[in-house]
Length: 388
Image (spheres, rainbow, N blue to C red):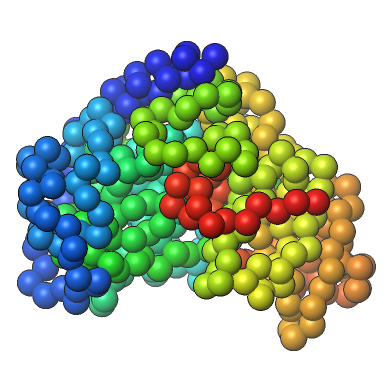
């Protein structure tokens, strides 16, 4: 099964190729540098062709990068996204995963069935320029603020991987950014971190229930792709080394175990879905911050069956602060919902109280990432794994 996954993943990278974007590339004349370079520019000779990147500035060696198959912009980012209402998004099955965010009262859902073919969407949500990212090989979804040091950036897919994770690049300086960490690791912005915006990966049904007025990314992308089907069939079957990953595996979990992770200054913690299945609510403290993890079944894998809507249920998990209006709450599972034992209010998967004394209140979302374990552990090997 793992051999099949590797073959399918390799084919997927080629199938996702397409025309590059036509967004103008203007070199920034002034960039506030991050950490000083410690890497020889010559170490990038094997991967530097066709780039205007400043290879004299780098936090990692060029030997850490490998080609994923398609070249620069071979997997085309979406730069002019179009949206439809939730009622008109009939192409998305209720159980399909969507990456969601709500900026300034502008809730949007990005179906993974589309992101899997493009990996990046440059958008403006609630007046804020954002980069919506998804790496299929790591199953990692992260949303970033595109304004960096007062400058507006837009991002493309480099065609390069590091620890099997998507390497993004900004079209203004062609600095290389690590998707799972949001850090610029090569180029003028080396050492700078993108600001991460709160987002979730949940089922389309849960997004629609929470945001009936929300918008959904349309299949009208300007590209012809087999949306609704995954080119990474059986990739998350488990039991072997992930595709295009040459690093050391952290064997505390299976490499493709799904985890929801949080990173505070003092601590990183991973909550495996395999354990959340039997513990739908986790009241915990991470880096001194009281948090709660909600897990709910009803979201399918985008990396299982060829037709995504036919794939197995892997569920979804989100993380919130347990402090509301200065009071610490404790939560328990209540069927498909969640309730706090302090007031008995019922909460949904998006952290909104739907009934009870706190009805209408919202929990503050903790920035979190959902990914495969091997990918997170490659960048955060010190991570604590939650135990029941």
